[in-house]
Image 1 (cartoon, helix red, strand yellow):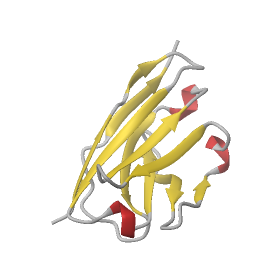
Image 2 (tube, rainbow, N blue to C red; image 1 turned 90 degrees about the vertical axis):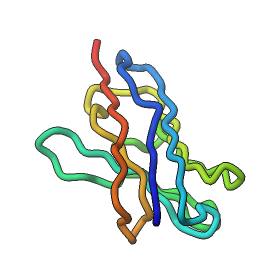
Image 3 (tube, rainbow, N blue to C red; image 1 turned 180 degrees about the horizontal axis):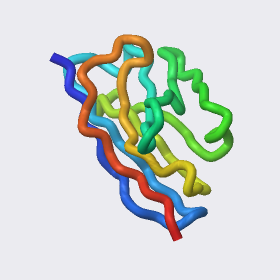
Image 4 (tube, one colour; image 1 turned 60 degrees about the vertical axis):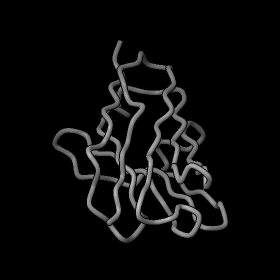
Amino acid sequence: QVQLVESGGGTVQPGGSLRLSCVVSGISVRFNPMAWFRQAPGNERELVASITLSGDTNYVDSVKERFTISTDNTKNTVFLQMNSLKPDDTAVYYCNHVTIYYTWGQGTQVTVSS
């Protein structure tokens, strides 16, 4: 059974930074393409960053140059470094496989507000 446990969210001022973590069990992040998603109130869940098996990364235009996705194979964890945060980044953030949507974790709330 695949489990995804996100953490690291919080409330920050515009321009601030946060580092999200997603501890994965049941599959190896070394052999699976992983992604971070987010869902803001009233909006559909959107993919914001993904990483391939070879380490190539992709980002939605709104977060390019600000967010960085990475993995630690020894800890089987996916990270999302978020810099220069904006109020529009406010959402619940989730991690999951890029295409096989395992049962979603509880997510971690990110609030960007002055």
